[in-house]
Image 1 (spheres, rainbow, N blue to C red):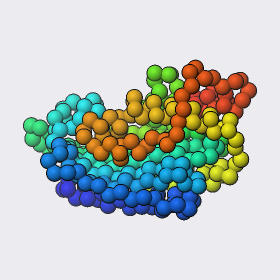
Image 2 (cartoon, rainbow, N blue to C red):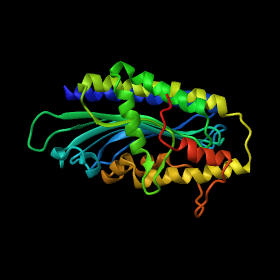
Image 3 (cartoon, rainbow, N blue to C red):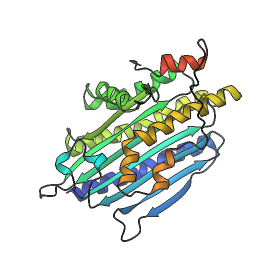
Image 4 (cartoon, rainbow, N blue to C red):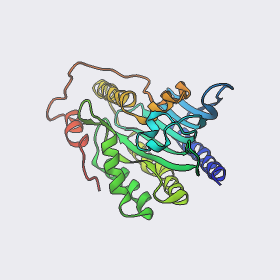
Length: 306
């Protein structure tokens, strides 16, 4: 039965990856490079995947969208911190993860991930499956209508699964996508959930599909609205500076990055979320009254965007 579940999830994820990359290619005018990979025999982690990457495009400076389906003899620590009873359990994990870094600083960076993990308890018993995922938006210049649209699309996608889901997952996203070492939100959030099994397989699968299917509706209207806005060196330098915060989060706090690296995953694919160019500056702070100051003090705070 679990095997059937895995096959259903795999088929959905491969279709989702293709739909998203096709839509992004149409906007950018450049095709994604498709890099199919398979783990070598004898490695602790077995499986395969497809990494699709677009670099140096007209709209996207770097856009990565990866599918992976792997299995291993023992869940890594990042996957069992909330499920200690599964420590050491053999597992199967599959998902689609993407990060798109646009060229124009007025177009926000976006992240989306949907995934499923199945593990078999070491002492025996039925396999346990759970889901995770969500999407979040990281603008470099804040626009209220963009933030409202993104959150409204997330809320509408989750509405069929209970009125509690969007508020819970919105708060979870705010808690998760936070650079706690700086006490600063990474972006304006969205929705995020992990270790989710309370609706059973069918409910969790349907909810995860709804989130994945909502992504293009949430993001593409914002891209189209901002992509032709003129910008200069000041906006570009601020974008590169804020990208540094993105890198900090992914390397220091992100469970998905840690899971991939700890379990022996494919490093090139795990790090496809990294921006191609970035800068750091010592104690740089935007001047009051500027759009850059407004981003930090009005958008990178926890707000009810609905």
